[in-house]
Length: 249
Image: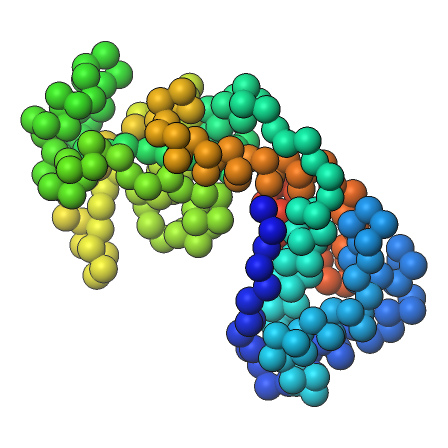
C-alpha cells in the first residue's frame, strides 16, 4: 500500500530540520537518517522532501512532523519492494486474533438505553441468541438497524487517534476468542446517553469489501514487520507493529 505524500503542518517558528540534522556525519549506519534495505534517506534528502512539502528551510519543525515524513519515506520504500503477499489463511488467523495482530477489526453493535440492558443482551449473545433477532428487538439506533448492526471497521491508527472514545477502545480489545463487550456512549459534552453491545465479526463472516480492506491492512503490516529498516536514534525508532517512526522511550 503506497503512502501518498501530503503537505505536513508546520508547528513552531522555523530551523527544526537544521537542528535535528546537525552533525549527521557522526551518525551510525553510514550517517543515514533512515535506511530500508539498500535504499537510504540522507539528511539532505529529508530536508529536500520537507521543503517540497512546503516547510521553509529556515524554520523549526516539530519532531512529530519530521518523524511523519521519515515514516512516509519508509512506507514508500517498503511498498516498492517485491512481496509475495500474505495468504488468505494467515490473514484470517491474524485478523481473528485481534487488532494488535491484524491491525484492524470489524464490529457490529446493538444500542440500548441502560447498562443493565446491555449486560443482559450481551449475556444472551454469549448463550447463543441470534444477533439479528436481538438487533430487531432491542436496538435503539435506526441507522445501525438499517445497516444490519454493522459498524465500520476500525484500524489500529484510528484506535490510537480515538483515545478518548471509550467504545472504540473497548472494541479494540475484541477478538474471535473474546467477541462480545459492552460500552457506554457519550455525547460531545461527555454525558452518557446510551450503551452499546459490541460484537466482533470474524474473518469468515466479513463482507467481501471488508475482507479485502482488512487483508490489505494485514499485508501492509506484515511487509513492515519483515522489512530491514534502520532509523537514526536521534530521530526515533521504527515500530514495526504500527509501521511508524516513534520517539525513543
